[in-house]
Amino acid sequence: MSVTRPSKATDMFRFNHIDRLVSKYGINFYLGYLSRWPDLCSVEESSNGRMMGYIIGKAEGQSTEWHGHITALTVAPEYRHLSLARKMTDYLERVSDHSYHGFFVDLGTFGMYEGLEYSVYRRVQEYYGSLGLGRNAKDEEDVFDMRKPLSRDPTRRSVRPNGREISVSSHDVS
Image 1 (cartoon, rainbow, N blue to C red):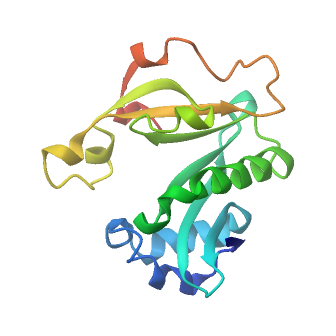
Image 2 (image 1 turned 30 degrees about the vertical axis):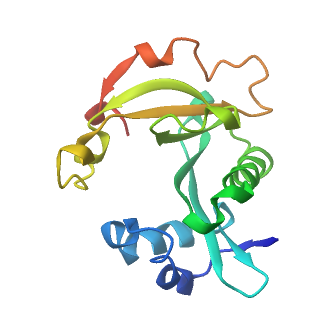
Image 3 (image 1 turned 90 degrees about the vertical axis):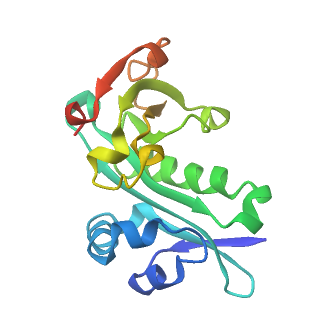
């Protein structure tokens, strides 16, 4: 059993047992998101207060490209069998739809979110290297820019059927 609650600034000091990306992004990164999009940042906690996972998002774009974006989503290894990633993405999708009136939600990943009804929109080449996070060849990998249409996009204009075949440079993605 878990409880979803809004993130608070002190949560970032509890992320390390969940993943190591915290040291790559830094405090200013997390505080910037938390101060600008507090309703798109939440954590999952166990009944004893142990952090089980977190999601950090933002709203961005213009016109029909206005959307929610999942920047970070992590579940601690010992809780990954509980479908917490689905629970947290559902929450961010609802907020993106109802509060921000986005057309879709997107995220950059290696393709594991297709089971959550996200589809590949395009491949972004050497994405992590462009962020200055690449420390070795594995970190230079391409990622998939994945999208899931929301209620404002009933005709599914924000997705495409051949997304895996479309490649863009990381420098072309804002």
